[in-house]
Length: 356
Image 1 (spheres, one colour):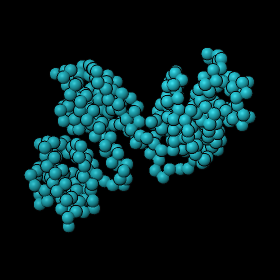
Image 2 (image 1 turned 90 degrees about the horizontal axis):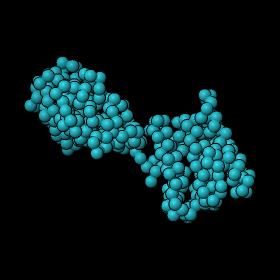
Image 3 (image 1 turned 90 degrees about the vertical axis):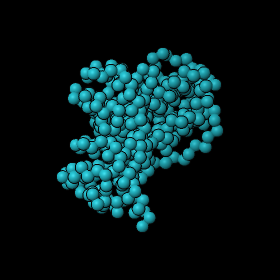
Image 4 (image 1 turned 180 degrees about the vertical axis):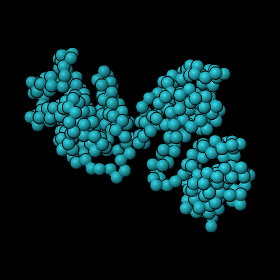
């Protein structure tokens, strides 16, 4: 089920709320026109739809006024560069509530206990960016438009979903995971979530494609996610001695990378304020005791060369290590296997501390 949190939109951007409220309500009117089987001009706009329903005596004076209010404020927000006030967004918020309630009560084929009106309230930890909010609103609008093309039976099956869209105060998708683009390779695809839109593609995260990414980076390609083309076929043309096979391997690792990052995102949202060390698809919670352990050969064994270089870079305690441990493979004569040894020993020390 697709949800949009209008409360979030309200406080992030009154302009966005007003603009998309207009589109949302206009699509509701289109469904009313369909339900009533009214004749309509092919290119009729919001105002013409209101007039058509009003002439057909389908609108109460209150609903008609609410429709005009949403229309006028939405038009202003779409074209005027002035700053829009929360009071204007609140006015539209109240109008939307009454319009949706009217639509559900009159045309909704499902039984629904419509919630009482509530003013929007701030979230303690707002976590949706404005671009992500806009993507979700567009998805809602597309769903409404597509439902207009359905048969009557199909439309009725969507009614409950549309009601949930209109009144939902929860978020079905973890903040940051809204899809903003899709990357394809041959007959495969992977969705790119909002929080990874401009993510740095650390070559060490792609074990089999590390050198390929380094070579691409030297040509100012594939350094961040947004530099990747929508279709990866032909990416190898920017480098020498790399071919289609390497593209396929990179695509598979890219899918794995995205899944790992999504899991990390969920973890950090579930446990805000905590520090983690990540290694591939695993992680360690960094406690105070663990963070104070010295990075020396007395505490860690098997990789004195790495420890020496860390100390030379003023990393003398565990708390100084980077969150993404694979980046340590950048040091001279240090590979992923060495970093994995460090990670495993950190885990063991964490267990020892927990058993004290």
